[in-house]
Length: 174
Image (cartoon, rainbow, N blue to C red; front, side, top):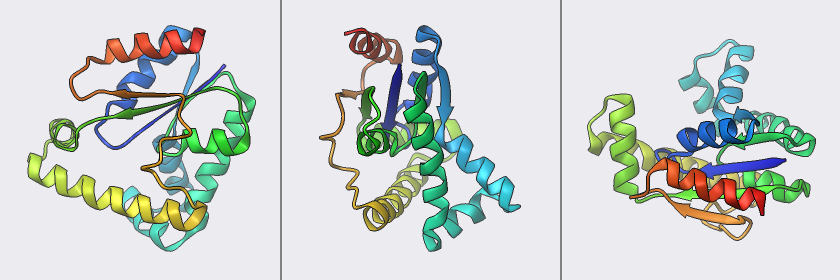
């Protein structure tokens, strides 16, 4: 079984991914963890590595190649911004899920998690999302606002993670 889980920062993908993986007994692979491992392999800080990714498309491509191989192997829950797109393009069979959430709510969650002011988190999210949108469009021709490849789009703005998990598990069993 393959499940991909994608969403913008603060949408709840990490929380939901852990819960779904536990419920279904799947390995949970987080693209962010792989990104951090790639930074370590290059001997640079995570912040510096993110800067380098804007200048060097091989960074995103190395991460995405790893995620694509895992998608094709199956029996995993992949969590990353592009996981659904990568599975779709590689023709890996599985459930592709996008978690949507209001921008201000996402900023509030990121601010709480990272101990920032909400306004700072909102600006950080906007800058990060603009960078990712531009990179993914340039590298792959993928528009992150195009949700047509997802089997299930859920809104976490006011729904508890457990309710989203129930929806995803039900869709995976269908």
